[in-house]
Length: 179
Image 1 (cartoon, helix red, strand yellow):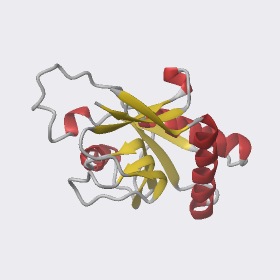
Image 2 (tube, helix red, strand yellow):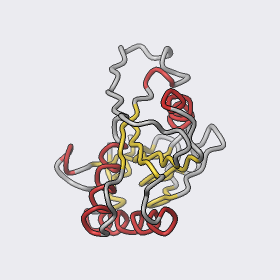
Image 3 (cartoon, rainbow, N blue to C red):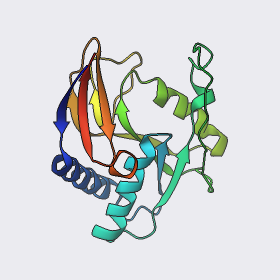
Image 4 (cartoon, rainbow, N blue to C red):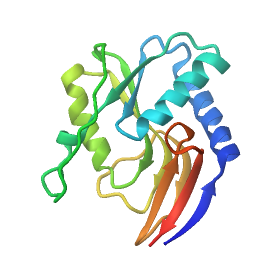
């Protein structure tokens, strides 16, 4: 197995600032906008963006929730290993709000399809957008595209994209892993 660094810590930080600025351009004061981190790995990105928007760009009190999609996936019964669900933490109604799904890597699109189904339990958003750190554009099984992307990666065959967050993995780095 080999690992190639796609993004180092400095590059990740630059991308986070760019994504935050793009969100501000479209959503201004965020009064009708909600960030939803898709469990498990999208929560790190969602937390970082919320912190950046509030502390560095003086955006007041952004609503942030976490959505577990484990049992909404169309492949959850196809695995041999037992599934471990994460916790959904959305303590507000999304009815008529603009929702931004946040995930670290967009791969096949199945996680986002599951999130679209899962969010309905919390109301009917007026709009849903997708923000991802990494868009693996040649791997899609469903017609899903991000509205905001940090970097587009052409990973093929047995290549995987691994995002490491300092809160969880001790570093902010994105790797291309080949088996």
